[in-house]
Image 1 (tube, one colour):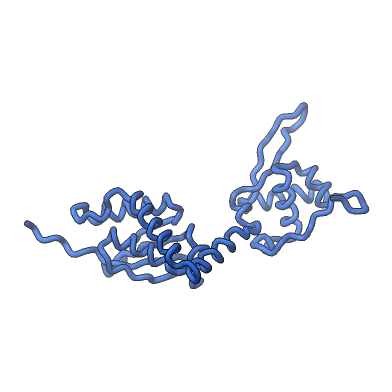
Image 2: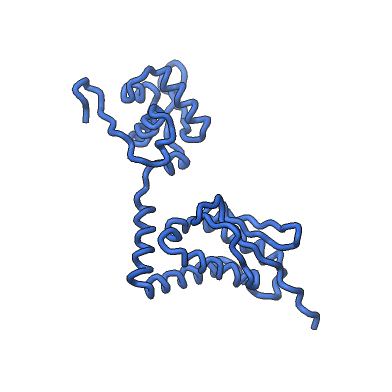
Length: 230
């Protein structure tokens, strides 16, 4: 769609994390995303600023990890730069699927709790299958923790385990692929904690919760008592 001046009309961005960027950078990211990739000259024509101004903004976006570029030799002269958005930039755009997922979880909890229960139980079973026999007491505790953290990290939790000065352990999740579900029903977090307890032997206590606005989810527990010698 073009305006009366012949320049293509770019609609205002929907509210999202993208709105925290300066307006020109919002427009540039939006235009690159629409095109798939674009050169500074193309972006200048669409956004309505000079090529030099576009390049300056692109370098700032590149420094922030929001765009990357490839070089292409097209005849004599310097290679052309084609810019595209990064996954970090993609995450800034509105994603109503996440809100729908949260609403769906809340709806199931209120109207079809048996369906939600069956789903969560299957989720925990699937999660436990990714952890190679970690709950067996014969496996050394440190090895069980190592396998647990590795498995959760593969699930997208950005898991990390640390030992406190008092000897207790903290299992920290710096990302949660289930956050939108948890916003619809906190019960999914309880199922996740139960899966952790299967590995470490119980006594897991939540210390931080992203659902409550904390920067991470953190669970605290103690190592099980040594098994008596036979």
